[in-house]
Length: 106
Length: 110
Image (cartoon, rainbow over all chains, first blue to last red; front, side, top):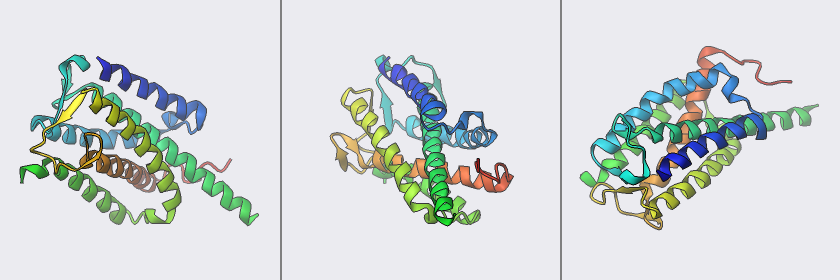
């Protein structure tokens, strides 16, 4: 169950980065959950396409075996970590850029 | 055409990204520096994971349904493109929803 462990680690890392490293606190913001809710069904569609056609296959020994829309449920952890980390980084960089701009103008 | 099965996903996600960018007039290219930084970080992290997982045979691809161009050992081109277009679509969706809802309009001017 290697994929399961790493997917879970990825979620933990993304949460730590969001809350304590970059301090973007995406997890506490409504807009984050709204975005996640919008992307989630699209993740299921692409997962279903990729797995129902066996474009990608998973070693049974690396996953716990529960599936949603064809893909291992571990994929939801992977997706959550990527959405959170992407938006945390994006928010961090854009906020920093805006702060620099204000400094230049003042 | 079966060798384009995975590429069809990339095309679908890219069309969503372009559609959102133009429909909401997000003009994301103005933020190309921040976009590049974010995309680069995500690409490095997730492509490393992917390369390692493929080497460990956590998952593998049907060679009849990909274009069979490897960008890293056994890592198909489609995976590289996936880790570019998906984060881009995530960012565009976020920006579109910010605009649509009007939430956080004052941003984080603390």
